[in-house]
Structure formats: structure tokens, C-alpha cells
Image (cartoon, rainbow, N blue to C red; front, side, top):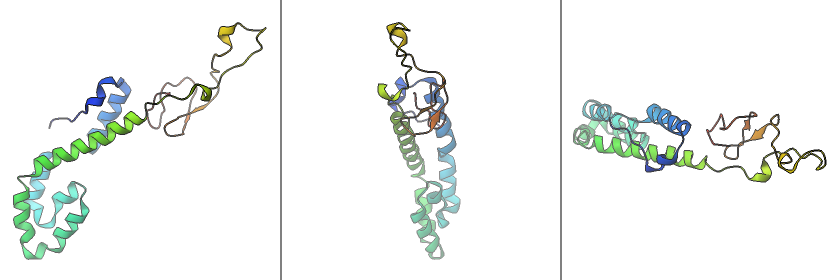
Length: 158
């Protein structure tokens, strides 16, 4: 199957690409499975449950005794590759949007700084960050260990 990659991945770093690929490989659907479900279990709406459309799946189950969902499921097996691609594209867009939201950097005032007396240190050392203080992620609010460049929970750059 062709992997879906949104255009916004061009300016991502390696960690963001790895997170995106891990999420996509865990959640994306396979076209062949969708076609086979529509062909063999279309009577019970299994292909709709597969694409996370439980409302249509339940409707197929309710009318499965009539035989109508069998005919519709057979016809839908020809449209399943496009529907699965559409589902995977929406999923990729969702993951890319959430990785893109994790991009903003913390404001300068939120970064803890070491303020020493001006007479004791030079001007360049006055604003050096303290390495022992915990910071919080601007995107998700979780604590970030000292020296970390990325949030361990959401992957945002800090």
C-alpha cells in the first residue's frame, strides 16, 4: 500500500517524522482487507465497522435478514479502495495537524533563567538557563526533564 504523507512533513525533524510514521502504521487501514470485508461480510456491515462508521454498520446488521445489505455490500466492494485511501488521508491530515500544533516554542519569559548580581558575572551569563529546573511543555502541559529538547509525551520541541 502507498503510504500517505502530507506536504507539511517537509520541514519536520527526524523525531517528528518517526512519530508520524509510527502513528500512521498503527492506525492506517489496508485496502485489500476493506475489499474482502465488503465482499464476504458486507451483509453484516463489517467494512463499515472497519472504517470506523458504526452507524452504517449497525444499520447493515439490522437489515441483514432482508438480503439488501448483501447486494449493497457486493457493489461497495468496488468502491472500498477509494474509501480506504480517503480514510487514510484524513488520518494523515489529523496526525500532521497535531504534530504541527506541537511546534510552537515557549515564550522567553517562561524559560527559567539564572539571575546573578551584575557585579559577580558578566552580562552574557546573566540569562543562562538553569539546568536543574523542570520545565513544562507549552503544547500539553507535562513536565519536561532538564536538558531535554522534546516533550516525552507529545513530541513537541521545547
